[in-house]
Length: 373
Image (tube, rainbow, N blue to C red; front, side):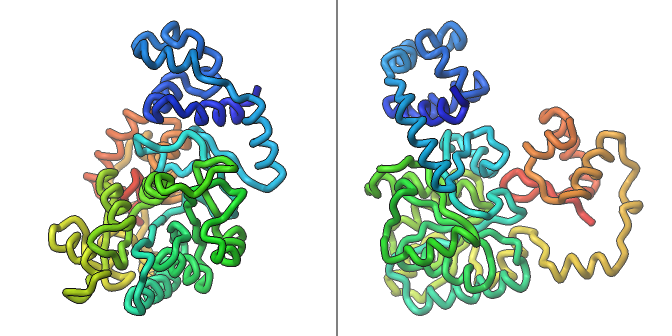
C-alpha cells in the first residue's frame, strides 16, 4: 500500500486529534509506519498514552475510500502532498497544527521566495478594494515573485485574487471544502483562471461540505503558509482578525491598512494598530522595508555596483558550502538548506547564526535565509 494512501487514511482518522497524529508521524517518519503499528502503537512509541493507543486500535482503516480518493485526484489533476513531501509548503510545516495531507490543484510553486496573504472583510468598501489594487500593482513592479494567498471569499479575498491575476502574479486560494466543489459558486470563473496562474488548495477530501468550522480551521493554513498577513479591512470581529491572530501565534509578521476613525470595516485594522499587534502599511514599499525584502530594482542596483563576495570575511569550509548553496538559489528555508548543504540542522543553525553576525546572511520570516550580495 502506498504512503499516499496511508497518509490519507491516517488523516481521515477523525477521532484522533491532529496534534497526536502529527507527533506519531514525525516520530515514526511516515504514515505507513503509523498504520502498520496501529494495533500496538506503544510497542514502537512507548510514551504514547493508553487513550491514544485505544483510539488507534479502534480506528477504522478506510483503505478502499483512500484508494478511491487517490484515483479521483489522479484523474482530476489534483496533487496529494504529504507532510514530508518536498512540494508541501515548507512555511506551513513549521506550524504545530499543520495538516498531514493537503490537496492541491494548480501550477504555482508553494515554496517561492515571498508569500503573503491578503485578507479582510466580506463586505469590502471602495477604499478597501483600492488599497488591494494599489498594493498588488506596486508588488508587480517591485516584487513580482510574490505569491498571493487568500480564501476566495467575497470582498477582500476575491479582490486580492482578481488583482493578482490581472497583474500577472500567481495566487492561491485555500478552501474550506473538497476540490470536487467550489464555494462560493459565483467565483468559479476566477478559480478556473487561478489553476493556471496559481492554484486551489485544501486539507479536505472530496464530499467535504463548506461547514462553518472548516472556514475557521482553513485560516491557519492561510496564515501558516505565508511570510506575512496583510489585513486590509475588518470589522471589530471577523475571519480576517482570526487569521491575523493565528499568524501572530506563529510568530509571523502582520500588517494592516489604517482606516478612518468610526468606519465599521476599519475598526479591526485600527484596533490591531492601536495595540501594536500589526504594523501599519500604506504601500508595497512599506511592506518590503518591514520584511527586509529587496525590490528587483534594488537588487539590480547592487549587481551594477559590482559588490563581490570576496568582501566577505574568511569562511570556514562549512560556511563556504552554505554560501555556495545560497548562491545557486537564494532565500532558502532552513529545512531545504540542510538537505542541499548536507549539514545537520543543529549544526546548520549554529553556523547560520555565526554567519548572520558576520553580515553574510540575513534571516527572513518563515525560517528562510537570504545571502547578502
